[in-house]
Length: 201
Length: 176
Image 1 (cartoon, rainbow over the protein chains, first blue to last red):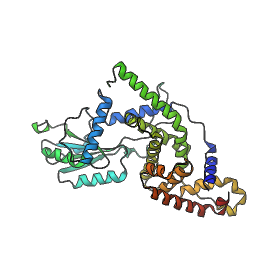
Image 2: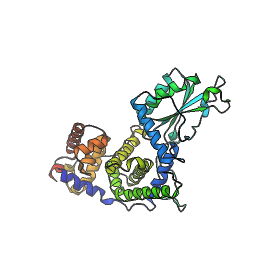
Image 3: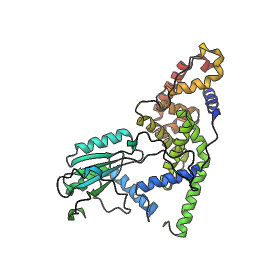
Image 4: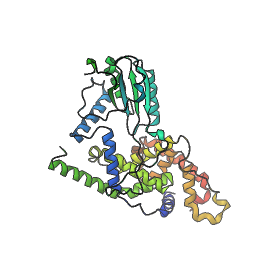
């Protein structure tokens, strides 16, 4: 039956159209570079910094996370959005929990649940890249400026924004979330209208 | 390797050349596997492009890996599974199973159409097992590796899927 299946598959593939024009490799490289940039893996030290971040992620999965040190590459700052408008005290610390590119919906739901249940968290919001609906094609011009017929589809991964009750507890909070499946990284920000106090390095 | 030095630029160019060669070699097969999973050439092209972009994003890390082909299948299939999840239960491509072969003997040449429709009715992971085993001709172990399950799960899903196909496609399927 194996031979029969294979023949049937080949017949099913017989109407394959000519691949669309445009540079598939080039478009993939451009889109892939955009993904790396979003994860903060691009800057002077490029690949080396990427390896450090990946190692740090692996290490945090296998033993308690060490206290957060300054990252070698500054990640793209997370949008703090309306989590900050709900600040009650003066100094409001927002932790952004960035999801991995390959995080599943179950992992995302579990992370949201864990955040809402965490005693350190006052408010949680979620920046959902899919909010615009099933946005299937993102226009991506190729090197000559013309748009190819087919464009990359990957939306950016989502970000959870959590306002913390006690900013001095951030290291413990980050340690709790760094190893969670689906989490790419945890970054600390300050709400824009607040002057940094000395506990935020 | 600092990217702005001459050595860094050469290194990056070599890396990109490797990737371009990989794309040329693997994209036709990736696209066909994607098509067999979703029955839409347009979508298959998009999935292929997404897969390649994701691989480029970690190209430095995976490039020394022995089995980039297997890795590419894993990324592709995760993209397919993810697509279905995002649409929460609605079919990516609606599948209407045509009449069983017994009713329309003149439709035997269309058996492959019925196979594709029948595949659509399977759970997506069972479909992946059938495509990887019987189109890509991968071993049970290779399929297990790609899907992140044990070989016995692969065997069970394969048997279940083929059994279902037999039921849906009727006697003609076995005979042809």
